[in-house]
Amino acid sequence: MNTNSIGAVSTQSFTFAEDEPFCLESGETLRPVALAYETYGALNADRSNAILICHALSGSAHAAGYLDGDPEKVGWWEETIGPGKAFDTDRFFVICSNVIGSCYGSTGPASIDPATEQPYGLHFPVVTVGDMVRAQVRLIDHLGIDKLLCVAGGSMGGMQVLEWAAHHPQRLHAAMPIATTAHHSPMLIAFSEVGRQAIYADPAWNHGAYYDQPRKPDAGLAVARMVGHITYLSEESMHLKFGRRLQGLEKYGYEFETEFEIESYLKYNGLKFTQRFDANSYLYVTKAMDYFDLTQPTGSLAAAFAASTEVRFLVISFTSDWLYPSYHSKQLVSALTAAGVDVTYLDVKSSWGHDAFLLEVETMTNLLGSFLDRLVREEQVPAPVGYAPRARFVPGVNTALPRTKLADNLA
Image (cartoon, rainbow, N blue to C red; front, side):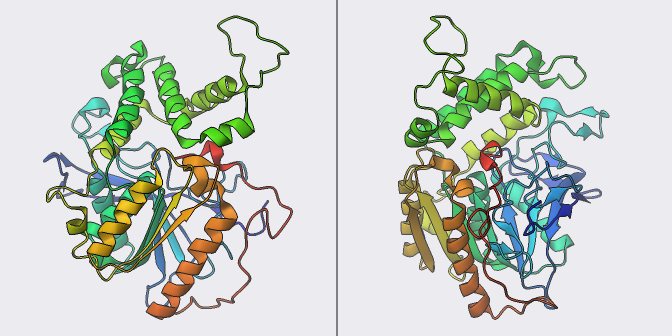
């Protein structure tokens, strides 16, 4: 085990809207609503050291440590959260919750509809990133935290960060949107739709009513994941990792079988994804990402942050990310600057593509850690009882321990 891991953790659940329904942006309501969440570290005396981590499309509340003590169940951002790491759990109280609409313990299409006592399926109302964040606000209230020190996340997690900063600026001191966008481009919506169509085309999908069926729409979900997975990589990383190498063959078989290593890799990840994710949740979460657009209703991204002038921003993009290219972050930075917001921007040179926010561990540790050091100084955040400073820990750099294989956790 990694000695700088926080060790065994367990997922908790918070339920709200049991009496008054939770109103969604669509006009629909949910009652009750459950949020799965995990916490790491301890609150300081004035409850000012809390950091919220927001996960990406297929993520969960399990961001760090070993779930239920199982070292095989490693958190999706284990490299970044823990004692001495970028999000130092000796110093900060770190929270991560699973978004509504997902399938890792929070209310979603696989949950039981109290009106029918059957899984919601497609009767589950459409949710937005705004709905996800307002549910997180309820969790933060439940934890007795008035103001978060920081909200951080990559990809769809970065969208949640931007939503927090734009619509709940009084509830956070700082925002770290990483490898993300203020709205999907037509190309990104097109990729999302291809994935959804793959699920629709699977006969086992049965219009979302498959939970009591012997077959699940695994074939469609696997194809959707394969398409998405391609967008998380870069051409350079694919050349380096796979090239045109054949899988266990010396020459082409001239058959419609899996021959290239990249084909085998995509099929493996597609199949693995079906073992941990729900097809209907994939539809709902990708649709929420497509609906997200901070330029609305004014048409101005700068106007979205008019009330965010007290929030400090660290915006990070990666040079090889073609899912959310650097120009998305540069547009965001221009809007924040126009709104008079304190913003630091870094376009990190990397060959890992979109997944760089998970894989560039040393760079991310230094950038995030330094920004948090600045926040602690400027906000005069007291340390928890018993805190003893230590050298910053970077997995695979400070020690010979192998790095966690995060590529399977993805965005």
